Image (cartoon, rainbow, N blue to C red; front, side, top):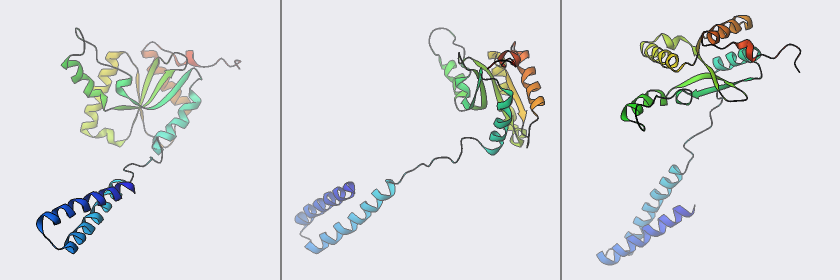
Length: 200
């Protein structure tokens, strides 16, 4: 612990200089230096500990179950991304030159939010749709305000947003129908992204 030893040496030097100037007994200064060194060492050891740890999983169990059901429905021409920041999917429209205070105000409303899943064209990275899993927390008033805001923002940006109630299991046919309905309303067809049956 080089930092601890350096701190102790500096503390001892300071106390020695004070002792010489004040005329205190030498053992008083030595005792004080020892106590201060211990305090400094403990402080360094404590603050030197890692302050973060790795999360056990990127997805919650509910998100993982949905992803396992979603994958068979998707074609390889669509890629599924999880926990994507809303500001990476849509952005405020600029008014005039540069980014005004109004632009930053609109940006802050989306910068701290994320979508559970986003569907992206594998070859072009074009954003195709976003998916939100709605659990019981979405019945809360503040979550409902958030949901209405995102629904309006996504509709205005022309990006389909599919809301799926959280379940223990998902039927593939029903999930495919939900995706088809959402995408077709925005001018997409999920079938356009599926491999033909005879493709490799």
